[in-house]
Amino acid sequence: MIYNIKKGLHGEITVPGDKSISHRGVMLGAIASGTTEINNFLRGADCLSTIACFSKMGVEIEGTHDRILVHGNGLRGLKTPRQILDCGNSGTTTRLISGILSAQNFTSTMVGDSSLKSRPMRRIIKPLSQMGANITSVLGNDCVPLRISGCQLTGIHYASPVASAQVKSSILLAGLYADGETSVTEPALSRNHTELMLSAFGAKVSSSGTTASVQGVKELYGQKIDVPGDISSAAYFLAAALIVPGSEVVLRNVGINHTRDGMLTVCKQMGANLTYENLKISGEPCADIVVRHSELQGVTIEGEIIPRLIDELPMIAVLACFAKGTTVIRDAAELKVKESNRIRVIVDNLSAMGADIEETDDGMIIRGGKPLHGAVIDSHNDHRIAMSFSIAALNCEGETTITRKDCVNISYPRFYIDLKKLIRD
Ligand code: S3P
Image 1 (cartoon, rainbow, N blue to C red):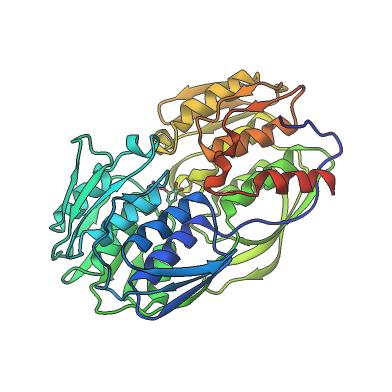
Image 2 (spheres, rainbow, N blue to C red; image 1 turned 90 degrees about the vertical axis):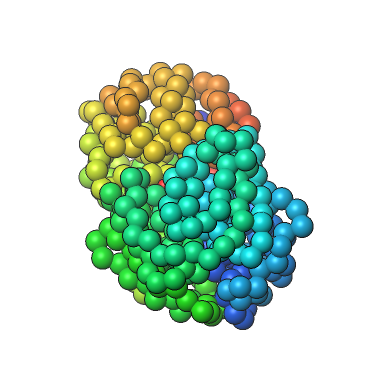
C-alpha cells in the first residue's frame, strides 16, 4: 500500500550506484589484468547476475556492501563455464556479455527469466555474426537461450538501426578481440559509459558524432572505479518532489553524464525548479541536485533526446499527468521491448488512475491536469513501473496497491526505505 501524503517530501537521499556503470565495471574488471576496485557498486539483482556469470567463468569477485574487488583473469583468461549462464532479468548482462563470449575459446549458453525470454536478441546476433561469431538462439525465436561458440572475430563498421547502448557495447566489447577496427554508428547517441570506461582501462576508443570505434587490444588494465549515483533511480524522488506540494529534496552525488541527463532537460522545459551543487565534471560527471515542488507545463519529447531518458519515460509520463496542457512522447517504440511493454503498461495503469492518456505507435499523448485516484497497479514485475507508480500514488486521492512490488530489487533494493525516509523527514 502506498500512502498519500499532504505535507511534502523533505530531506536528502544518496541514491544507489549507477546500474549501467556497475555492470560494465564487473565486465571490464573480469577481462582486465590486475584487480579492479569498484566503489558504490549497485547490489541490485541485475548486477548480481553479471557477477554470477563471471564467477562461473572463474573470475574471483569479493567484497562487502557496495565495495567490490574483481580479480581480473586477463583478456583471454575466462574459463569454460561448467553451468549455464543465468542472466536473470538483465538485458544488459545478456547483450554485453554476448560480445565477450563470442571471442572466447569455449561454448557457453545464456538463459534468463520469463521477461528476458521475450526480449529481442536479433539486434546483437546480427552484428556479432557479421564479425564471424557463432551465436544462435536455441529455440530459433531470436531470444534467449543463446548458445555462443567463441572464435576469432573480425572488425566491422556497423550502422545500427536502433539507438541502443546495449547493442553498441556488445559490438565494442567483441571489437576488443577482433582484428582491426570495430565501429558502430547509431541513429542517435546512446549512453557512452562503455566508451568512457574502455578508455580508462587502456583500450583505444574514439567517438565522433554518433559513431564509436575501438581497436583490437592485447590487454586491459584493472582500475579503481567510483560509481556515481544512478540518475534513473534519482528520477523517482526528483519527480516526487516536483509533484507533491511543499517538497524540497536534495539528491546527492547523481551521475549527470550528458547521454543520460535527458530527464533533467525535460523537467527544466516543463518548468521544474532544479539546481545543481557540488558539480564534478571529470570522468563520469556528477552533482547534487536540489529540487522543489513546481508548477509544470506539458512538453513534446521526441528525436535525439529519447535515448538520453529512455528509462525515465515511465516516470516522465506520470509527471505529465500533473502538468498543465498536453505532453506528447514520440520516437519511443523501444519502450515496447523493455522489461515489459512499457507503452502499454504505462497507458493501462495511468488510465486505471483516471489519467487522460492515449497510446500511440511510438509513444503516448497525455492531457495533464486531471486529478488521479488510487488504483490497483499491475507492475508486470517491471521495476521501473513499480517505482514510477509508487510516486504517482503519493499525489492521488485514495489508496494504491502495486502488484509484485518487490521487483524494485532489480535496480533499487532500498527504494521503499528511502521513500519512507523522505516522507518522515
Ligand atoms: C542500458 C541501455 C539501455 C537501457 C538499459 C541499460 C545499458 O537499453 O534501457 O536499462 O546499460 O547499456 P538499450 O540499449 O536497449 O536502449
